Image (cartoon, rainbow, N blue to C red; front, side):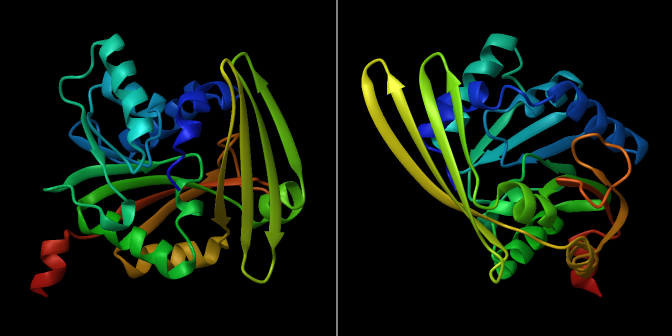
Length: 255
């Protein structure tokens, strides 16, 4: 899902997100598990608020997104903050990830990995992230939970207003496929124009995600509530996983 027309309104429409809390948790997890510097990739970086926060904190950041429009917004923000040097932006599909070297850590937030499914695609995305990860590398990523898909999003519509546009967002849940189909229409005010994007999110149980991570050489260090960053609850709407890579891919190939 590329978020093409949506890119330039993403920050306004995502205005309630607490990036400071998210950054504090993600940076804390990286440091707690020994990643205090080096190369960190933000998978599905979008317009890059978290990417830039981590860059300002001293990490050598790679931002990966398949939307040229999202990366354009990120590039403008980086220039304004004076952090363009040392920031690499790659327009890539996560399923075709090519980082040209190893990384100390990867992060992915705001349910990027929900959009990848179904399962065989989700598993390939985990495998790709694992391939470039150094031993003891840290992977921090979030996912919307099955509870959110079935109890919060299912059959619901939302209208979000901002100064330049009105966004109407509707959701249809397919419990058999474990999928929410999302229809987004954006009405611009000046000049009057309307565009529409459609995409899907897939949901995965915690035990399945853990099994996939372990299959590709990660050990799950913790799973927390992805909004409060406290203990996971039955009604948590988002997981946030921290996983540690147990070996380099080269080591695996030599076995």
